[in-house]
Amino acid sequence: MTDFDYDPIPLDPPGVLAPGVILDDALAYRDRLARRRTVRDFSDEPIDRAVIEACVLAAGSAPSGANHQPWHFACVGDPDTKRAIREAAEAEEQAFYGGRAGERWLNDLKKIGTDASKPFLETAPWLIAVFAERYGIDESGARQKHYYVPESVGIATGFLINAFHQLGIATLTHTPNPMKFLNQILERPSNERPYVLLVVGHPSQTAMVPRAATVKKSLEQIATFI
Image 1 (cartoon, rainbow, N blue to C red):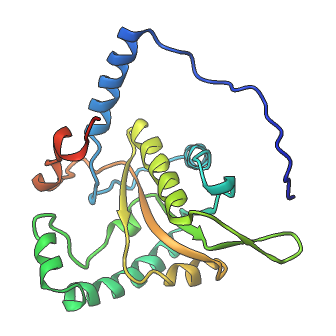
Image 2: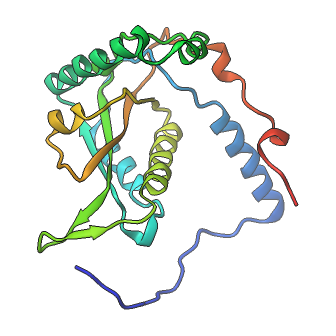
């Protein structure tokens, strides 16, 4: 349905916090989010589909260009499909680590400790392939132009990662290049482009993270106040 009419409704904002409380909450949120780490050692402990659905709906509430919501989240829990994704991803990664990435990129990755082996794609209970809709298709089959697609999908993906983090669920953003195999395996249409493959699950009890990943830029390095 296309609606070109402006039909405003009252804002329903969250409650306004007192100045002291809002600062305390901001600092607590900062500290909680600062503990987020990308995980590569996952447990196979299951996560209820309803939890995944709730987090995807949270991601779907993100702002987007003209509110077109140009994203699709393909949520994969089927073991056979996860295995197929792993095999296809590792084939691309073999080429990447075999030299396609270039020496400088590979050197930058040494401190992260990654390689072409991606067992977590099968171990973790869920994979979420985030697709960006390059254009929409309306009910008549005609193309619908989307606006600010990468920006919109990036914001929604950030919402999704944060939603899982608030629940104590770990994630990994995996971006083998190219990722067209996701369209084939997941039977997604040609107007959708794979944006990121999000691995979702609980970390294993022996999970380790690279020390280098804990080093973040200071406020002075990432922000200016004018």
